[in-house]
Length: 400
Image (cartoon, rainbow, N blue to C red; front, side):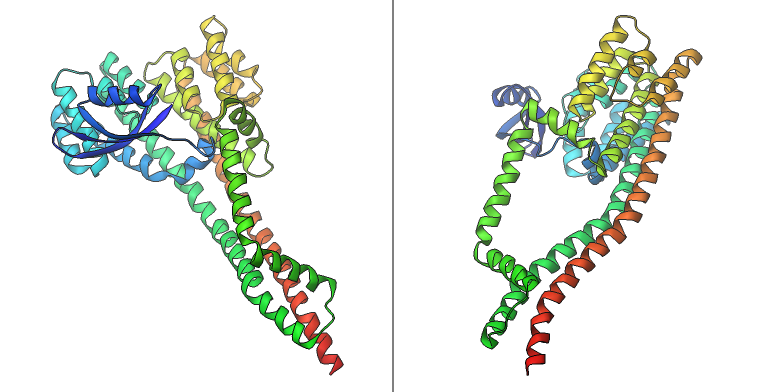
C-alpha cells in the first residue's frame, strides 16, 4: 500500500512524500531509518488506475526529474565528484526535491551506493530509475546510463505535454458547454416559466420537458449532488478492489475513443522503458518484471509477469509476446528482429518511436473530430432550448 506522510528531519525541515509499506507502522519505521520524525501518515488511494492515460496531465514531476537527471549526468560527465554534484543539485532544486537530495547526499557520504540511497525515496525515484542507476554502478558507466535516462525522461515529458496540449481545447469547450446548460436550466428557464404562468400560455411538449428538467434541478439539486457523489465514491471503492481494478482496466482499453489512445500510450512507455533497462545492462527478465510493476494496467501487468516467467524458463522473448492478447503482433515481430540482430534495445526504441507517432496521429485525429462533434452537440442543445423557450412566446404573439 502507499501512504502519504509528513515528517521532519533532524534540522527541523518539513518533508512530504509518498512511501510504500504493508502498514502505517512499517512506513513509520522506514522513515525513522531515514532519520525522519513522522508527523502524520495516512493511506492514499487512486480514484482510477489509468496512469498511462492520466499521466499525460501530470508533466511537472516528469519535467523536474528530467532536469535533475540531465544536470547530474552533465556534471558527472564533466568529471565532478558525485558528492559535489549532489550538493549543487540540492541548492538548485525545488524544496521537495532539495530535501530528498540532501538525504541522498548524506547517505552517499556515509558510504551508501547512489542507487540504494535513491531507492529510499520511491515517491521521487521509481523502480525503473533505481534499477537503471544500479545497472550503471555495476557496469561502471554511470554517466552513460544517466544520459540515456535523461533522454528517456525528456522524450516522455515532451510526449505527455503534446497530449496535454491537444486535450486542453476540447476540455475547455466541454466545461463551457456544461456551464452554459446549467445557467440556462437553473437561471433562465425558471424565469420564463413564471412569465408563461402569468399569461396562462399552453406549453408545447418541448417546453414542458425543459421546464420539468429545470424544475427538478432547481428543487432537487442536492439529490443530484448526492447521487453524483455516491456514484463517484462507489465506483472508486469498486476500482480499489483487485477484482474491480482488473475489470476497470480491461474495460478502459475497450472504450471506443480513449481506449486505443491509452493502449498506444502504454505501448510507447513500455517499449521506451524496456529499451532503457535492457540497453543499460539489466537482465531481460528483471526488466520485464520492473516494467510490469509500473505499467499501470492490471491485465497488462499480469500478462507481462507471465511473459517474464516464460522467458525465465528459456522461451524466446518474441514468442512470449506474440502469444499475448494484450500486445499487437508487431510487438512480437519487432522483438524477434531485435533477438536475431542482437540489438533488442535499439529495436524497442524504434518501436517506442512508432507508437509515439501513432499516438500523436490519434490525438490529432481525436481533437480534429471532437471539435465539430462538440460544436454540433452544443448547437443542437442550445437550439432545442431556444425552440422550447421561444415557441410559447410565438404562440402568445399570434393570439394577441
